[in-house]
Picture 1 (spheres, rainbow over the protein chains, first blue to last red):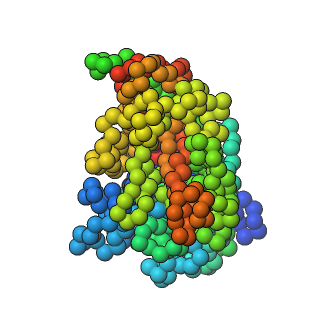
Picture 2 (picture 1 turned 180 degrees about the vertical axis):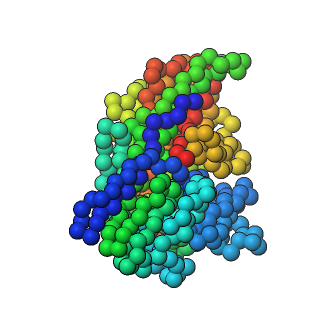
Picture 3 (picture 1 turned 90 degrees about the vertical axis):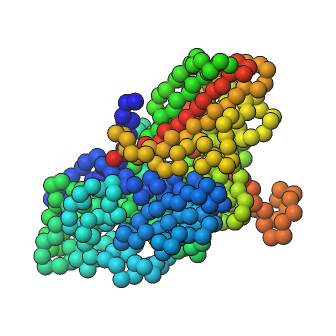
Amino acid sequence: MPKPKVGVTLRIEVRDDKGRVVKVIETPSRSFTQNFATLLAASMWSGYSIARWHTIYNVYDVMGNQVCVVGSASPPPYCQSPLEDVGILFYSEPQYIAPPYQSYTIYMPGIWPGSSFCPDPKYAYGPCSPISTSVLSPGLFSFPSSPNYTASGWQMTYSQTWTNVTGSPVVVSSVALVFGASGNPLAPNYYFLYAAIVDNVTPAVVINPGYSVTFTYTLLYAV
Amino acid sequence: MLAARYRVEVRDKEGKLVTVIEDDSKSFTMNFIKLLIASHYNRNDVPTFAVYNVAGSPFYTGYVQTPYVGVPWQIFSMNPALGFFYSIALPPIWLGTSPCANPALANGPCGSLVACCTSRNFPFSPYNFSLSAPCHGVTSCSPSLTEEGWTITITNQWLNVSGSPVTVASMALVFTVIATAPAGTYGTYQESAEYILEPYAAIVDNLPSPVTVWPGFLITASYTIYFPV
């Protein structure tokens, strides 16, 4: 079967403290994560059916916490965070920070930077060695607001800018597109954070003090 | 997401393969993209998009116009939940007799709908579609890692039970969301609100040439969705 001609591109743009572009990298994205594909598969089914089939979907949030989707059945003992089903996969504008992430390195959906390369991005839970928001300060996460039909397909663009607010250079070696996911019995607006895409940045980019870096993921849906 | 391929096989009464068509899928639909975009938002900010079900009737994202799906929930569902202990199962690949003028803007397969649901009112009846089989037997319950990336393949088999040859010229991958409307909208008794299944086409494709399926012949349609790695 020939390889489909579609995919995702990652653009990285570094600007100096005067706003001048000093570096641009544009590369095909390599890795939808296993967590994303598993969550999507789980979201096809009702909790009633998942329990009936004795199926368990295991996924991991950005901190590596296991989330089990077990349907309406009783969860197995190892499962600390059971869900009956998966309802939302792309939650991007939470109204508050979910409790597990309030003291985490980064705490909201977006395009997260990491300081290390990931050994195998498709199995990573997020960027490797995520960089604290007290080092790279995040701007708003921009995500699609209306359908954009292009000659190449439906285009979905995600973007976020981070600024080095320390006095030292910062190295970015991996990035991840992170969404919130939700399901029953989580209350409305509650979510857990997971990485849908993780990419290594090669070569790594250095963000000097006062410089900013913008990560842009462009996803094309075939037409 | 992103890329998909379809495959259509027709087998005669003896199970002999008589037709195979396989190609890149051309069209994620605008209806799918609208639901996908709306699912990024919180309930206080979700945009209102008109989305059309396979019959061409509108429903809406957000909470302003009815029937509404709010922040769309389970937009890839083949098995919408109607409570904790009950859910509906729908075969996900539907077939039509005509090509669509613009599949990306189509609401479903075009021409007459000949394969859908489990009703006996259509020329094709689902075959090997089992409610008790894991994932209804239409797909593996978990994604597979292949050279092309993570893949999810959804396969439907349909048997021509009509007694007449049936032409298939378009196909669609149909998921179902649940919309809410004020009590009384659809005439069923509900105290506060009514819920309705809204099957919508996420992908629509024209076949390169129409396929004729004779009585007693089996047509197998599948979509494989790729997530690049």
